[in-house]
Image (cartoon, rainbow, N blue to C red):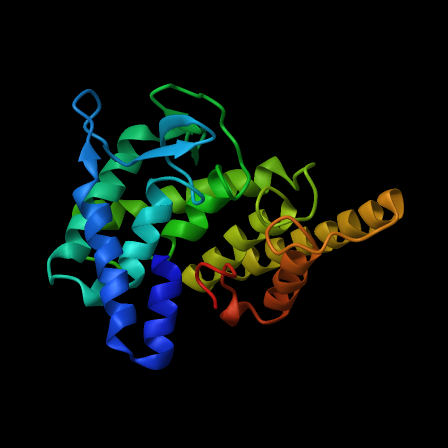
Amino acid sequence: MMHAALALYRKTGQSHWQDMYVKGAMSLMDNWVQDADTGQWLWKSQIFGQKRHYYGACHGITSNANILLQGAELLAENYTAIIIKRTVNTLKLSVKQQDNLANWVLCTKPNNDKLLVQWCHGAAGMVTAMSRTPTIDAAESKQFDQLLAETAELVWLAGPLLKGANICHGTAGNDYAFLYMFQKTGYSVWLDRARGFAMHALEQCQNARAYYGQSRYGLWTGDAGLAIDLYHCLNPEKAAIPGLDLF
């Protein structure tokens, strides 16, 4: 709702869309709770019947932090620093690091220790959700860039996903982690990696069509999302997750 309201406000300038966005933001801020055991700032989401603390770009802390930061200029002046500090501190407390690589478990309470690499609940989504975080004059902000680089490197080393070519939990979604890192750093290695993944995703799509005898047309789990990803590999300055960072 907040993504749609913010996009409509910026397109039309009509105040009721701003009011809707701010109402959603205040609800998020009011329900953002610090866990007494870990010190992490988390939201509890009810997905498929269970209430859990998620981290990822689909249902977790980075998803909510992303939309709060996108429209932070519509909120109170000090909110940007509060959102960044809470989010970065939480991700630093919860990160799993080894050999200069980083990732996060699926969720906690009840715990699920899966370490996924896909966009919706894994490393790739952590990069896309947080790579556009504004830089502030705080230690948390300055330490975060290295953490994102370690996360994107894990996505690269893990290789293309076996779950298909889609954005949600497939190779195209992981591809966006590299496109966002290219936008953030300007380093050509990230664009080269993005285009390499894109070619693999295209082959996955063609193989799936041949196997099933039909295409898959959805945005998040189908060929429409892959087509947008391929366009963004040709125009990386425009790269953005459709429906979240792009309308």
